[in-house]
Structures are given as structure tokens and as C-alpha cells.
Length: 123
Image: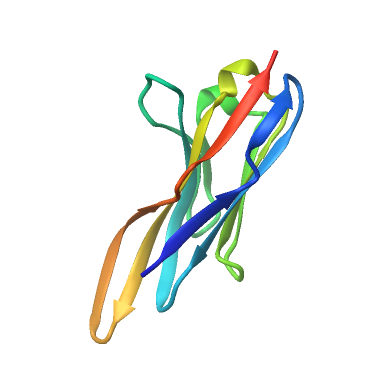
């Protein structure tokens, strides 16, 4: 079984920065795409940033130029550096990974989610 554990959320003033981290743990797996999504109260969960196994990145228009996603495949981690935070960035942030697990001759690919970490930005 694979688990994703996030850290780094919290309260920050508008214009400030936060860094979110997510680590995957388990055995016999490889990670394909990784990313971050966020969900504000009463709204749907939206993609914030994604990074492929090859390192290609994709960002939501609302965070381009302010957020940077990175991954460390040796550590099975994905980070989100968030700068110039705005009150509208307030949300629960969820780590995402598409992971292939291996069990004997079987392999299964599916999406995994972290438990979420809250980001609050005061104006």
C-alpha cells in the first residue's frame, strides 16, 4: 500500500510564501505524474500544478509566475513553493500522484491522494 503525506500548510499574510511538501511511502512502486490540487469551501477541487515523470510542468493560470512545483524521485517527494500568496489562494491543498504498484507478476496503476493540508492567507 502506498501513502501520501503532506506537510507545510499554515497561516500566512498576503504577499508571503509557503512551501508544501508531499512524500510517498510504501513498497514496490514507481511514481508517474505528481501534482497539487486545492479545494476552497463550497467549491470543486481544482488542479494547481502538475509535473510529469519527465519533469514537464503545468500550472493553473491563477498561479503561474507565483507557484513552482518540483519533484525528487530519489526521495519520492513533490514540493510546491508558493510565493506572493493572495487571500484567494486560501484552500485545502491535496497532493496527488499516479502510481504503479507491483505485486508478484501483477502491476496496478491508479491515482493516490494525500489527506490535505490547509493554507490560509490573511489580507
